Image (tube, rainbow, N blue to C red; front, side, top):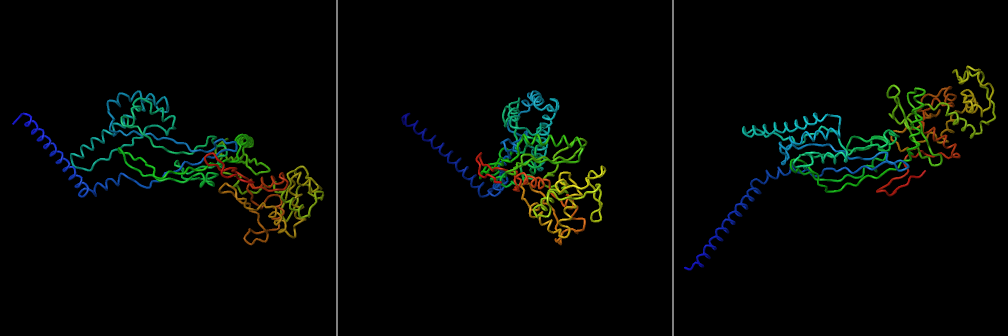
Length: 496
């Protein structure tokens, strides 16, 4: 046999041997696949199911709330909570020990609340925890005990950071080596922030929780459906010991609200009210600025005492406080009587020396210690804010028919529900003598009601009434929102 034929036979033999090996390997792989699919299949599928969580809700980005001059009053801001996975595949203890000191120094520069030494100790405490877990896992494995769960979420000793701080941290020594070699990762949180702090805080409102679970009060609550948007759906999968979200249905972000609040007027109003509260040492106070023709609320501030010499927005008194309006109600009484033609501005009324008996009750004017106003006109009873003057005029006009007086108040519209855009707003309580459900109507009710007692009216309703006088008799509802926007485009304009 020639040498050439001998070489060919060897080549054929080698090919045969290689083909046999390949076929055997393929057969083994196929056999293993069949075994895994049909014998171990259920077990592996159960393990796989544990790594996937379908139909996880993805919250939409909440819409912003702007002032009338398009300055942000409430917005959503991403914050980041930082962790280290000390079980990451690329982590090496020598590298960690080499860089932990310079890393701690940089953390101290960015967050000086703790010393570099404290940061260093806390970082190494995380690694020591990981080593203890490794020892427990080894011991349990040797003794055939239950496997110890690995802790892969060691919280960095830092507050929640913003995006700029996150970028700076990722450039620090050791952390700049990437997620696999440093173990650094984060969880994103979405928090509601108010760039102007407490300005109009109770009107703008708050939300529940840090993950934007819905409006709690104010405009945040009233317009929650628009601001919230529509949530999406994701599938949560476990990768390298951590869950990541794969978006299936993208969320629809919330719409933006443009309020009527003017930041400059709001700031001036809030400072003026606070200064007055401090001057007279009051328990609480409210101030509202309303545009006459439109009803747009340009400023609204509500201050309650929270400490010695300290006042903050604790409650929206302007819309919810049901209190007796006092002397401001005298104008309402006079308007009713004038419209009914039962009183003329020049009609006379005797206020005496400032102290009289009406319906068995003692009634005083504020100048009783100076001898009262004596005989004055109906017009001057308003000018001087005389309790006696207004009470006697109303008693003279409606003493036999008090229901006509209350009908006149209702006719003005002061008792109507204005359907304000602030949840929890109050509606005036003005009782009627013929209302069987109302509290007992006595002889003293009519005169005392005439100058602002026996009724409860939120301050904003009193404001609306006086605004109607300035607005040539047209009563308009207070407005807190002027536009709804989507992606910067106006989709709804509120009308007066």
